[in-house]
Amino acid sequence: MSESTLPPEPTVANREAIQSRTAHIDHPSLGVVLVCMDPTGLLAAAMGWNFVSRLRPAVASALREKFGEHPIVWEGPCDHLVLVFFDVDKADPETVERDLAERLSRQVDVDGRSFFIPTYLGIAIASEVSTACDAIDLVRASGAAVHQAILSSATSVRATADSIELLQQEVAATTELAKAIGSDFSLHYQPIVDLSTRQRVGFESLLRWQVGDELRLPADFLDAAETTSLIVPIGRWGLTAALGQLAQWQRKSGDTTLFMSVNFSARQLVDRGLVQHVADAIATSGVPAATVWVEVTERNLIETGSPAAQTLLELDALGCTICVDDLGTGFAALRYMVEQPVQVVKIDRSLVSKVGIVEPLRSVVGAVCALSASLGILTVAEGVESEDQVDKLRDLGFTHAQGFLFGKPAPATEFEF
Ligand code: C2E
Ligand code: CA
Ligand code: CA
Image (cartoon, rainbow, N blue to C red; front, side):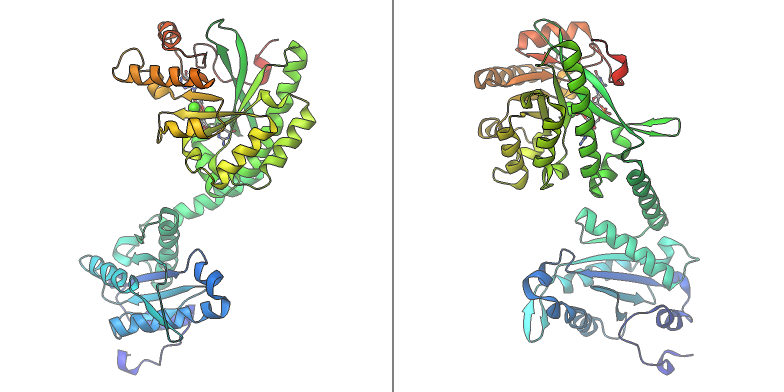
Protein backbone atom coordinates (compact mmCIF):
# COMPACT_ATOMS: atom_id res chain seq x y z
CA MET A 1 0.00 0.00 0.00
CA SER A 2 1.49 3.35 -0.93
CA GLU A 3 1.27 6.29 1.49
CA SER A 4 -1.23 8.15 -0.70
CA THR A 5 -3.78 5.30 -0.61
CA LEU A 6 -3.68 4.97 3.17
CA PRO A 7 -6.91 5.71 5.05
CA PRO A 8 -7.06 9.11 6.85
CA GLU A 9 -5.44 9.25 10.28
CA PRO A 10 -7.61 8.89 13.33
CA THR A 11 -6.88 11.81 15.65
CA VAL A 12 -6.37 9.69 18.73
CA ALA A 13 -3.57 7.14 18.73
CA ASN A 14 -4.57 3.55 19.26
CA ARG A 15 -2.78 0.26 18.79
CA GLU A 16 -4.51 -0.71 15.55
CA ALA A 17 -4.01 2.69 13.97
CA ILE A 18 -0.32 2.80 14.80
CA GLN A 19 0.23 -0.78 13.68
CA SER A 20 -1.58 -0.42 10.37
CA ARG A 21 0.07 2.91 9.59
CA THR A 22 3.58 1.61 10.26
CA ALA A 23 3.27 -1.96 8.95
CA HIS A 24 4.95 -1.10 5.65
CA ILE A 25 7.90 0.75 7.23
CA ASP A 26 11.33 -0.74 7.51
CA HIS A 27 11.54 -0.98 11.32
CA PRO A 28 15.14 0.20 11.84
CA SER A 29 14.22 3.60 10.42
CA LEU A 30 11.22 4.12 12.77
CA GLY A 31 11.26 6.66 15.55
CA VAL A 32 8.63 7.67 18.10
CA VAL A 33 8.53 10.83 20.17
CA LEU A 34 6.14 11.06 23.08
CA VAL A 35 5.36 14.63 24.10
CA CYS A 36 4.10 14.97 27.66
CA MET A 37 2.32 18.29 28.17
CA ASP A 38 1.66 20.17 31.40
CA PRO A 39 3.34 17.45 33.51
CA THR A 40 2.73 19.16 36.84
CA GLY A 41 -0.86 20.09 36.06
CA LEU A 42 -0.02 23.80 36.17
CA LEU A 43 -2.32 24.71 33.27
CA ALA A 44 -5.01 22.35 34.45
CA ALA A 45 -4.99 24.04 37.85
CA ALA A 46 -4.75 27.58 36.48
CA MET A 47 -7.13 27.29 33.53
CA GLY A 48 -9.45 24.38 34.34
CA TRP A 49 -9.94 20.91 32.87
CA ASN A 50 -11.92 22.07 29.84
CA PHE A 51 -9.00 24.16 28.77
CA VAL A 52 -6.65 21.22 29.17
CA SER A 53 -8.78 19.06 26.89
CA ARG A 54 -8.01 21.65 24.19
CA LEU A 55 -4.24 21.35 24.67
CA ARG A 56 -3.70 18.14 22.73
CA PRO A 57 -5.38 19.28 19.50
CA ALA A 58 -3.78 22.73 19.77
CA VAL A 59 -0.22 21.47 20.21
CA ALA A 60 -0.81 18.72 17.63
CA SER A 61 -1.87 21.29 15.07
CA ALA A 62 1.12 23.56 15.91
CA LEU A 63 3.43 20.61 15.29
CA ARG A 64 1.68 19.62 12.07
CA GLU A 65 2.03 23.21 10.90
CA LYS A 66 5.75 23.12 11.61
CA PHE A 67 6.53 19.62 10.30
CA GLY A 68 3.89 19.07 7.60
CA GLU A 69 2.91 15.46 6.89
CA HIS A 70 5.91 13.99 8.56
CA PRO A 71 5.95 12.91 11.38
CA ILE A 72 2.41 11.67 11.92
CA VAL A 73 1.09 13.44 14.99
CA TRP A 74 -1.46 11.56 17.03
CA GLU A 75 -3.14 12.56 20.22
CA GLY A 76 -2.14 10.05 22.85
CA PRO A 77 -3.52 9.14 26.26
CA CYS A 78 -3.84 11.78 29.00
CA ASP A 79 -1.87 14.89 28.06
CA HIS A 80 0.41 13.18 25.58
CA LEU A 81 1.05 13.39 21.86
CA VAL A 82 2.55 10.51 19.91
CA LEU A 83 4.75 11.46 16.96
CA VAL A 84 5.84 8.71 14.58
CA PHE A 85 8.78 9.31 12.25
CA PHE A 86 9.42 6.97 9.33
CA ASP A 87 12.97 7.77 8.40
CA VAL A 88 14.88 8.47 11.56
CA ASP A 89 18.29 6.98 11.28
CA LYS A 90 21.25 7.53 13.57
CA ALA A 91 22.25 10.87 12.04
CA ASP A 92 18.82 12.46 12.23
CA PRO A 93 17.62 12.36 15.85
CA GLU A 94 19.51 15.44 17.01
CA THR A 95 17.81 17.57 14.36
CA VAL A 96 14.41 16.12 15.21
CA GLU A 97 15.01 16.75 18.89
CA ARG A 98 16.23 20.30 18.28
CA ASP A 99 13.37 21.21 15.92
CA LEU A 100 10.74 19.85 18.27
CA ALA A 101 12.26 21.56 21.30
CA GLU A 102 12.47 24.81 19.35
CA ARG A 103 8.79 24.72 18.39
CA LEU A 104 7.66 23.67 21.85
CA SER A 105 9.66 26.44 23.49
CA ARG A 106 7.44 28.97 21.72
CA GLN A 107 3.85 29.76 22.53
CA VAL A 108 0.89 27.80 21.14
CA ASP A 109 -2.59 29.16 20.41
CA VAL A 110 -5.35 27.54 22.41
CA ASP A 111 -8.89 28.84 21.89
CA GLY A 112 -7.59 32.07 20.42
CA ARG A 113 -5.11 32.85 23.22
CA SER A 114 -1.36 32.23 23.33
CA PHE A 115 0.18 30.02 26.00
CA PHE A 116 3.55 28.57 26.84
CA ILE A 117 2.96 24.88 27.47
CA PRO A 118 5.51 23.02 29.59
CA THR A 119 6.50 19.79 27.81
CA TYR A 120 8.86 16.84 28.19
CA LEU A 121 9.97 14.61 25.31
CA GLY A 122 10.66 10.88 25.35
CA ILE A 123 12.38 9.75 22.17
CA ALA A 124 12.64 6.13 21.04
CA ILE A 125 14.52 5.30 17.86
CA ALA A 126 14.43 1.72 16.63
CA SER A 127 18.13 1.54 15.86
CA GLU A 128 18.91 2.64 19.44
CA VAL A 129 16.27 0.59 21.27
CA SER A 130 16.19 -2.67 19.34
CA THR A 131 16.08 -3.26 15.61
CA ALA A 132 13.57 -6.02 16.27
CA CYS A 133 11.00 -3.70 17.81
CA ASP A 134 7.90 -2.34 16.12
CA ALA A 135 6.13 1.01 16.53
CA ILE A 136 4.12 -0.22 19.53
CA ASP A 137 7.33 -1.24 21.33
CA LEU A 138 8.74 2.19 20.52
CA VAL A 139 5.68 3.94 21.97
CA ARG A 140 6.32 2.04 25.23
CA ALA A 141 10.03 2.85 25.16
CA SER A 142 9.25 6.53 24.54
CA GLY A 143 6.96 6.40 27.58
CA ALA A 144 9.88 5.10 29.67
CA ALA A 145 12.07 7.90 28.31
CA VAL A 146 9.50 10.61 29.07
CA HIS A 147 9.23 9.28 32.62
CA GLN A 148 13.02 9.65 32.96
CA ALA A 149 12.85 13.15 31.45
CA ILE A 150 10.27 14.27 34.01
CA LEU A 151 12.19 12.72 36.91
CA SER A 152 15.47 14.31 35.90
CA SER A 153 13.95 17.63 34.75
CA ALA A 154 15.62 17.13 31.34
CA THR A 155 13.70 18.53 28.37
CA SER A 156 14.14 15.29 26.47
CA VAL A 157 15.53 11.82 27.06
CA ARG A 158 16.36 9.13 24.49
CA ALA A 159 15.26 5.57 25.24
CA THR A 160 17.93 2.86 25.36
CA ALA A 161 17.70 -0.90 24.96
CA ASP A 162 17.06 -1.38 28.68
CA SER A 163 14.76 1.62 29.39
CA ILE A 164 11.63 -0.49 29.83
CA GLU A 165 13.40 -3.22 31.77
CA LEU A 166 14.83 -0.65 34.19
CA LEU A 167 11.36 0.72 34.84
CA GLN A 168 10.00 -2.79 35.34
CA GLN A 169 12.76 -3.42 37.87
CA GLU A 170 11.85 -0.16 39.59
CA VAL A 171 8.19 -1.16 39.77
CA ALA A 172 9.15 -4.58 41.18
CA ALA A 173 11.56 -3.02 43.68
CA THR A 174 9.04 -0.50 44.97
CA THR A 175 6.37 -3.19 45.31
CA GLU A 176 8.88 -5.25 47.28
CA LEU A 177 9.69 -2.19 49.38
CA ALA A 178 6.00 -1.51 50.13
CA LYS A 179 5.48 -5.15 51.18
CA ALA A 180 8.46 -5.00 53.54
CA ILE A 181 7.14 -2.13 55.69
CA GLY A 182 6.35 -3.41 59.14
CA SER A 183 8.00 -6.79 58.64
CA ASP A 184 11.40 -6.83 56.96
CA PHE A 185 12.81 -3.48 58.03
CA SER A 186 14.89 -3.23 61.17
CA LEU A 187 17.06 -0.65 62.88
CA HIS A 188 20.70 -0.76 63.74
CA TYR A 189 22.04 1.60 66.35
CA GLN A 190 25.41 3.33 66.46
CA PRO A 191 26.72 4.85 69.70
CA ILE A 192 27.54 8.56 69.95
CA VAL A 193 30.11 9.46 72.62
CA ASP A 194 30.89 12.59 74.62
CA LEU A 195 34.49 13.34 73.60
CA SER A 196 35.49 14.74 76.99
CA THR A 197 34.52 11.55 78.86
CA ARG A 198 34.38 9.03 75.99
CA GLN A 199 31.12 7.87 77.55
CA ARG A 200 28.27 6.70 75.32
CA VAL A 201 25.57 9.39 75.60
CA GLY A 202 23.23 8.48 72.77
CA PHE A 203 22.68 6.55 69.56
CA GLU A 204 21.87 7.16 65.90
CA SER A 205 19.25 4.81 64.45
CA LEU A 206 20.07 3.48 60.98
CA LEU A 207 17.63 1.69 58.73
CA ARG A 208 18.29 -1.86 57.48
CA TRP A 209 16.26 -4.06 55.12
CA GLN A 210 16.42 -7.84 55.39
CA VAL A 211 15.89 -9.51 52.00
CA GLY A 212 16.43 -13.26 52.37
CA ASP A 213 19.93 -13.71 53.78
CA GLU A 214 21.01 -10.27 52.68
CA LEU A 215 20.92 -7.21 54.94
CA ARG A 216 20.50 -4.21 52.65
CA LEU A 217 21.92 -0.79 53.52
CA PRO A 218 20.09 2.51 52.90
CA ALA A 219 22.25 3.17 49.82
CA ASP A 220 20.48 0.21 48.15
CA PHE A 221 16.91 1.38 48.71
CA LEU A 222 16.69 4.95 50.03
CA ASP A 223 16.49 6.58 46.58
CA ALA A 224 13.60 4.33 45.55
CA ALA A 225 11.92 4.92 48.92
CA GLU A 226 12.22 8.67 48.46
CA THR A 227 11.11 8.93 44.83
CA THR A 228 8.04 6.78 45.58
CA SER A 229 7.36 8.56 48.89
CA LEU A 230 7.46 5.17 50.63
CA ILE A 231 10.04 6.79 52.89
CA VAL A 232 7.10 8.44 54.67
CA PRO A 233 5.54 5.21 56.08
CA ILE A 234 9.00 3.61 56.44
CA GLY A 235 10.24 6.65 58.37
CA ARG A 236 7.17 6.66 60.61
CA TRP A 237 7.74 3.01 61.43
CA GLY A 238 11.44 3.75 62.09
CA LEU A 239 10.73 6.66 64.42
CA THR A 240 8.23 4.68 66.49
CA ALA A 241 10.63 1.72 66.73
CA ALA A 242 13.64 3.90 67.62
CA LEU A 243 11.78 5.78 70.37
CA GLY A 244 10.41 2.50 71.76
CA GLN A 245 14.00 1.24 71.99
CA LEU A 246 15.19 4.51 73.55
CA ALA A 247 12.47 4.31 76.22
CA GLN A 248 13.59 0.79 77.08
CA TRP A 249 17.26 1.82 77.35
CA GLN A 250 16.42 4.93 79.39
CA ARG A 251 14.43 2.76 81.84
CA LYS A 252 17.19 0.14 82.09
CA SER A 253 19.96 2.65 82.61
CA GLY A 254 17.95 5.16 84.65
CA ASP A 255 19.50 7.78 82.36
CA THR A 256 16.78 9.98 80.91
CA THR A 257 19.32 12.12 79.05
CA LEU A 258 20.29 9.22 76.76
CA PHE A 259 19.24 10.37 73.29
CA MET A 260 18.25 8.85 69.97
CA SER A 261 19.22 10.60 66.75
CA VAL A 262 16.84 9.80 63.89
CA ASN A 263 17.39 10.65 60.21
CA PHE A 264 14.68 12.49 58.29
CA SER A 265 14.84 12.98 54.55
CA ALA A 266 13.49 15.99 52.66
CA ARG A 267 10.43 14.05 51.56
CA GLN A 268 9.54 13.25 55.19
CA LEU A 269 9.82 16.89 56.21
CA VAL A 270 7.12 17.97 53.77
CA ASP A 271 4.75 15.27 55.04
CA ARG A 272 2.05 17.31 56.74
CA GLY A 273 1.34 14.63 59.32
CA LEU A 274 4.97 14.31 60.46
CA VAL A 275 4.87 16.66 63.44
CA GLN A 276 1.77 14.99 64.87
CA HIS A 277 3.37 11.58 64.35
CA VAL A 278 6.51 12.66 66.20
CA ALA A 279 4.37 14.10 69.01
CA ASP A 280 2.43 10.82 69.26
CA ALA A 281 5.62 8.71 69.23
CA ILE A 282 7.10 10.84 72.02
CA ALA A 283 3.90 10.58 74.08
CA THR A 284 3.59 6.80 73.56
CA SER A 285 7.21 6.05 74.39
CA GLY A 286 7.34 8.51 77.28
CA VAL A 287 10.88 9.74 76.45
CA PRO A 288 11.72 13.43 77.08
CA ALA A 289 11.31 15.33 73.78
CA ALA A 290 14.82 16.78 74.06
CA THR A 291 16.28 13.26 73.84
CA VAL A 292 14.81 12.93 70.34
CA TRP A 293 17.39 14.29 67.92
CA VAL A 294 15.96 15.13 64.51
CA GLU A 295 18.72 14.77 61.90
CA VAL A 296 18.27 16.67 58.66
CA THR A 297 20.90 17.31 56.02
CA GLU A 298 21.96 20.89 55.48
CA ARG A 299 20.25 20.83 52.08
CA ASN A 300 16.91 20.70 53.91
CA LEU A 301 17.62 23.85 55.84
CA ILE A 302 18.09 26.04 52.82
CA GLU A 303 14.86 27.95 52.46
CA THR A 304 13.77 29.81 55.53
CA GLY A 305 9.98 29.80 55.37
CA SER A 306 9.83 26.65 53.18
CA PRO A 307 7.49 23.82 54.25
CA ALA A 308 10.50 21.78 55.46
CA ALA A 309 11.80 24.71 57.52
CA GLN A 310 8.30 25.18 58.97
CA THR A 311 8.26 21.50 60.01
CA LEU A 312 11.60 22.02 61.77
CA LEU A 313 10.24 25.00 63.67
CA GLU A 314 7.29 22.89 64.80
CA LEU A 315 9.55 20.00 65.83
CA ASP A 316 11.67 22.49 67.75
CA ALA A 317 8.52 23.81 69.43
CA LEU A 318 7.71 20.21 70.47
CA GLY A 319 11.03 20.23 72.30
CA CYS A 320 13.02 17.98 69.92
CA THR A 321 16.73 18.61 69.37
CA ILE A 322 17.37 19.72 65.78
CA CYS A 323 20.56 18.40 64.28
CA VAL A 324 22.22 19.27 60.95
CA ASP A 325 23.67 16.12 59.38
CA ASP A 326 26.56 15.90 56.93
CA LEU A 327 27.66 19.50 57.44
CA GLY A 328 30.26 20.37 54.84
CA THR A 329 28.80 18.29 52.01
CA GLY A 330 26.18 20.73 50.75
CA PHE A 331 25.86 24.47 50.74
CA ALA A 332 27.57 25.23 54.01
CA ALA A 333 25.74 28.44 54.80
CA LEU A 334 26.41 29.63 58.31
CA ARG A 335 23.33 31.82 58.10
CA TYR A 336 21.12 28.76 58.54
CA MET A 337 22.91 27.73 61.71
CA VAL A 338 22.03 31.13 63.11
CA GLU A 339 18.53 31.60 61.67
CA GLN A 340 17.10 28.15 62.26
CA PRO A 341 16.59 26.28 65.51
CA VAL A 342 19.76 24.18 65.27
CA GLN A 343 21.20 22.62 68.44
CA VAL A 344 23.64 20.06 66.98
CA VAL A 345 25.81 19.91 63.85
CA LYS A 346 27.39 16.70 62.58
CA ILE A 347 30.50 17.09 60.47
CA ASP A 348 30.65 14.57 57.65
CA ARG A 349 33.20 11.74 57.60
CA SER A 350 34.70 13.05 54.34
CA LEU A 351 35.87 16.13 56.29
CA VAL A 352 36.62 14.42 59.60
CA SER A 353 39.02 11.99 57.89
CA LYS A 354 41.11 14.93 56.62
CA VAL A 355 40.95 17.13 59.69
CA GLY A 356 44.38 17.57 61.25
CA ILE A 357 46.06 16.69 57.99
CA VAL A 358 44.81 19.14 55.43
CA GLU A 359 44.92 22.92 55.68
CA PRO A 360 42.88 25.10 55.30
CA LEU A 361 40.29 22.43 56.10
CA ARG A 362 41.57 22.18 59.66
CA SER A 363 41.09 25.92 60.19
CA VAL A 364 37.64 25.91 58.59
CA VAL A 365 36.42 23.00 60.73
CA GLY A 366 38.02 24.62 63.79
CA ALA A 367 36.12 27.82 62.99
CA VAL A 368 32.84 25.90 62.63
CA CYS A 369 33.45 24.31 66.08
CA ALA A 370 34.24 27.72 67.60
CA LEU A 371 31.17 29.33 66.03
CA SER A 372 29.01 26.40 67.18
CA ALA A 373 30.37 26.69 70.73
CA SER A 374 29.56 30.41 70.81
CA LEU A 375 25.99 29.64 69.65
CA GLY A 376 25.61 26.79 72.16
CA ILE A 377 25.51 24.23 69.34
CA LEU A 378 26.99 20.75 69.94
CA THR A 379 29.40 19.36 67.34
CA VAL A 380 29.56 15.67 66.42
CA ALA A 381 32.50 14.31 64.38
CA GLU A 382 31.18 11.50 62.18
CA GLY A 383 33.04 8.45 60.92
CA VAL A 384 35.84 8.47 63.50
CA GLU A 385 37.84 5.32 62.82
CA SER A 386 41.20 5.70 64.56
CA GLU A 387 42.52 6.63 67.97
CA ASP A 388 44.89 9.29 66.63
CA GLN A 389 41.92 11.26 65.26
CA VAL A 390 40.45 11.66 68.74
CA ASP A 391 42.96 14.13 70.22
CA LYS A 392 42.90 16.25 67.07
CA LEU A 393 39.11 16.39 67.10
CA ARG A 394 39.06 17.35 70.77
CA ASP A 395 41.67 20.07 70.14
CA LEU A 396 39.52 21.46 67.36
CA GLY A 397 36.64 21.78 69.80
CA PHE A 398 34.36 18.86 68.85
CA THR A 399 32.07 17.95 71.73
CA HIS A 400 30.91 14.52 70.47
CA ALA A 401 32.02 11.75 68.12
CA GLN A 402 30.62 8.75 66.35
CA GLY A 403 32.33 6.11 64.25
CA PHE A 404 33.63 2.57 64.00
CA LEU A 405 36.24 3.37 66.69
CA PHE A 406 33.47 3.72 69.28
CA GLY A 407 31.12 1.13 67.81
CA LYS A 408 29.72 -0.01 64.49
CA PRO A 409 25.98 0.14 63.85
CA ALA A 410 24.48 -3.02 65.37
CA PRO A 411 21.11 -4.47 66.43
CA ALA A 412 19.78 -3.33 69.82
CA THR A 413 20.53 -6.72 71.40
CA GLU A 414 24.28 -6.09 71.04
CA PHE A 415 24.28 -3.17 73.48
CA GLU A 416 24.45 -3.65 77.23
CA PHE A 417 23.18 -1.34 79.94
P1 C2E B 1 24.38 9.16 57.74
O1 C2E B 1 23.22 9.77 58.44
O2 C2E B 1 25.52 10.07 57.42
O3 C2E B 1 24.82 7.93 58.61
C1 C2E B 1 26.14 7.57 58.86
C2 C2E B 1 26.57 6.50 57.92
O4 C2E B 1 27.96 6.30 58.07
C3 C2E B 1 25.92 5.15 58.24
O5 C2E B 1 25.76 4.45 57.01
C4 C2E B 1 26.96 4.49 59.11
O6 C2E B 1 26.91 3.07 59.08
C5 C2E B 1 28.23 4.99 58.47
N1 C2E B 1 29.33 5.06 59.43
C6 C2E B 1 29.26 5.35 60.74
N2 C2E B 1 30.50 5.38 61.28
C7 C2E B 1 31.37 5.10 60.28
C8 C2E B 1 32.81 4.98 60.22
O7 C2E B 1 33.52 5.13 61.21
N3 C2E B 1 33.34 4.71 59.02
C9 C2E B 1 32.57 4.52 57.91
N4 C2E B 1 33.17 4.23 56.78
N5 C2E B 1 31.21 4.63 57.92
C10 C2E B 1 30.64 4.92 59.11
P2 C2E B 1 24.41 3.72 56.64
O8 C2E B 1 23.84 3.04 57.84
O9 C2E B 1 24.68 2.92 55.42
O10 C2E B 1 23.43 4.92 56.30
C11 C2E B 1 23.64 5.69 55.17
C12 C2E B 1 22.72 6.88 55.13
O11 C2E B 1 21.37 6.49 54.98
C13 C2E B 1 22.74 7.69 56.41
O12 C2E B 1 23.88 8.50 56.37
C14 C2E B 1 21.44 8.44 56.32
O13 C2E B 1 21.57 9.58 55.51
C15 C2E B 1 20.55 7.45 55.61
N6 C2E B 1 19.66 6.77 56.58
C16 C2E B 1 19.96 5.75 57.43
N7 C2E B 1 18.88 5.43 58.17
C17 C2E B 1 17.89 6.26 57.78
C18 C2E B 1 16.52 6.43 58.19
O14 C2E B 1 15.97 5.75 59.09
N8 C2E B 1 15.80 7.41 57.55
C19 C2E B 1 16.36 8.20 56.59
N9 C2E B 1 15.59 9.12 56.02
N10 C2E B 1 17.62 8.06 56.20
C20 C2E B 1 18.39 7.11 56.79
CA1 CA C 1 22.68 10.81 60.03
CA1 CA D 1 25.97 11.89 58.52
